[in-house]
Length: 485
Image 1: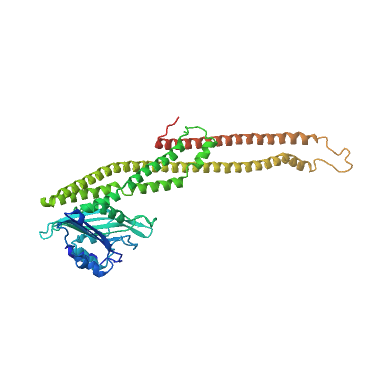
Image 2 (image 1 turned 90 degrees about the vertical axis):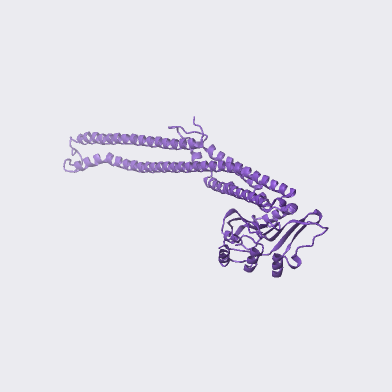
């Protein structure tokens, strides 16, 4: 079934061919004849000869009566240029070359099914074939695209217990596109491997070296930086509410300016989102699973290796690898707890941000109510102007009315005006003046009562605004943990 699935998935893959090189490490009983060779594979014939160990890639002759101890043979592809190198169903070799690579080096056929996995992934299997007992490994990490480029690394290894040679395929590209001079992860691992080449007998050596680069102090420092930025963010949010607002307390000009301006919420919101994403990057829990599986694979190797293979050098190397993996386990447990606290604090600050938004919305609603009140005041003033016009009309209306009465035949103003005025002319003044005073007094009394009612309404609205603001402030203070006085 594995062979059928391998062929099935192989037909669905894309094959953007990249530059290829090889690495050979052979260790002997005499340290002075150890070999470490890393060169390019430029031609198709060279690739086939390397897989079959023919021609210039044939096993070197033994020197100084030294006996072969262990070795490692890798096909390398690093600094990959294709933007889709770590996309699903993408292989950086030609189809026939990849098929030959997997079959001749006895690499895990399941590797082609892992092209779509995301995040760190580790898988191992022991094949107890009597002719070629081997331990097969797949170690892969792929991320989402940054810009247009996919990123990651892939490792497929097969350790043959009979020949004590680790064969494999290793490829990757840079994790940081901003720097062309910065080496990629493969370069860092190869430098470490060169320093440990005399101990290349352990199949878990290369995965452990990769863990060393992936779980470096850079990741720890990133989490520390998150905590520092988080503290500054908490301070920026909490200081906003250090000045309490009590129920019924009048808000002065400084408080109004604080409520109106406040922190730059858009900036803080973006900072929160960035911190959350950074805290989730290289989440310790995912790497804990990888370390646990590598520990299981290491135990499988040690329990399967024959007693004759457990030389003092190999025993020491195995103990060192187990110690390193144990260190990673403890380190990731502490980092997981540290990250969990950071995420909890980020969640709390997100709640604070929600409270700030609610407060700002209530403040805006209050300010809108105040603006509506002011608009009503302007309308009232317009009404007062109309009342003034009505007052002037009322002032002259009685006299006009009486003048109309006296313009009738009640008086005779004809002739030379001598003796033509009625002796009852006093009636005009006696009637018009008290009537005018009565109308003006009634208007003044009504206007005074109306102004008093408007002032009371305005006072009630201001008191309501203070109550709403005070309640909102106390709610945020309770969420941020600031005390009120």
